[in-house]
Length: 170
Image (cartoon, one colour):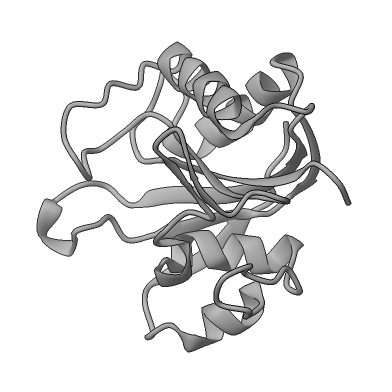
């Protein structure tokens, strides 16, 4: 389908009284409000915080397939950043706990670096917290560089702690 984009959602801190898990559903509503219409929603997956010794609470993750409304990669990145800021996201240090993280995983028709944004996401194939929810909604999606499906990439990963905990609504 043209204009298909996959966005990973993650949170491990509450926001305005909503627990981290609920923040993901609020984020889906914010995507809709921004004109980024979801076509498919994975479930919510719980995964261990990274790095393991960080002492952070577990993360809740999901992947949304959406119509990017014709936005170029950098425009979509800026729109997602604005949504993150509405949820109190501050980017101070790498791997810090967060109220909301929105990452572009892949955009149909875009392979390479676009104004500093690398597509597909350069580490998506190493991350169960991206691949498990992505394989749920698009198991046959094929990585444009590695030529492997989301399901195959997930099966190739070493065993890690992740589990589907609920449906994602929004």
